[in-house]
Amino acid sequence: MKFAHFSQLFNKVGMETPARYEQMWREVELADELGFDYGFQSVHHFHKLRPTPAVYCTGAAARTKHLRLGPMGYTAGLHDPISILEEALVLDNITNGRFELGLVFGVYPDYFRVKGAQPSIRREWAKETVQLVNAFYKHAREAPTDGAGLFSFHGPIHNYEEVEFAIRPVQQPGPPIWLASTQRETMQFLAQEGAHGGYLHLSDRQEMSPRIQEFLAWWGEAGHPQPPNIGYLCFVYVDETDELAIQKATPWVIASTREVYENTPRQGGVFSQSEEKVGPRSDEIFRNKTDIDFLLQRNLVFVGSPETVANRIREAAGEGMFNTVMAEFNIGAVGEEDLMRSINLFGQQVIPALRGFDPTL
Image 1 (cartoon, rainbow, N blue to C red):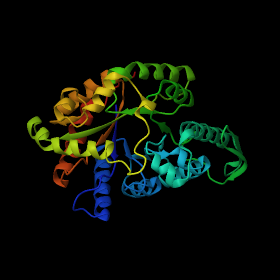
Image 2 (image 1 turned 135 degrees about the vertical axis):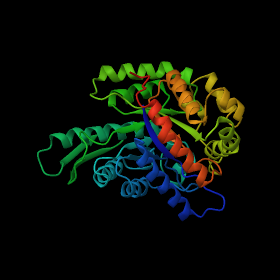
Image 3 (image 1 turned 90 degrees about the horizontal axis):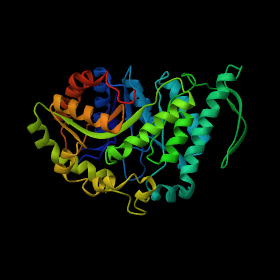
């Protein structure tokens, strides 16, 4: 099993933005020291603090030695695909081959309104971005020049003729691609393209398990040399005892849930949940997303002592077929002492207990 420090860079009451960024860098540095595999940050615009993947990846790369770093992710439909490719190549070189390219379809119509983008084709746009990036990886691998030579691509939305690239990816064939989806058709596309997937903790794991099993089968049929990563984005708080952890984390989990799922842009709200509809059990979870007793009973947040959290993750991963824990530690109004203790306990005791476990194999 693999482990990511995941940051959504929540605003903190009484903490100015520069201090909030500095706290995030301290988290990332600690995660690197403790043996986490990844450092990921979500990307949002205007009403949040995290609009620029390049800033996160460059800042984190300067402060770490081992973490693989990436955004989760670029809202593909807001960018020309070749611009995403160009930035990914630069970041792969800046991080010396530690970059992971995360893409998302986009959940806020307001982003598309402000940037003059087309929300109706955002899924097709994201898929074409995956195809373009993979086409470039193949091209760069075969190009005989010092750079990557002249690259052309013809898709249903974009066409590029003889674009000269002077830069190659450090990684071969290139930075891994991620695009989370719960749609069966999209998951089949991702498996064929070799793009890693994942889902949120508010999707029911029993409903997701058969889809993940299909994804794994499609991945195998495609013949990719490496197994896929299935990410699971979740809230985590670890303390010395279960009682202490639950007592402290309850208001923090509720606050962060509201921040993510209810604090939306004033114009446009979010795209319809039915676009990524999983099933009635997931609908029930979403209706009860701020009920801490419901979340704990359904094992939808990982709160407790190190032993309890490790057991909760093991049970959840076996049920939901994920092998990469994307853990959000800085939730709600958690103070830095509690925050760093939680990350330390997770890295020192939870990760070693689960490292050899992978329900997807």
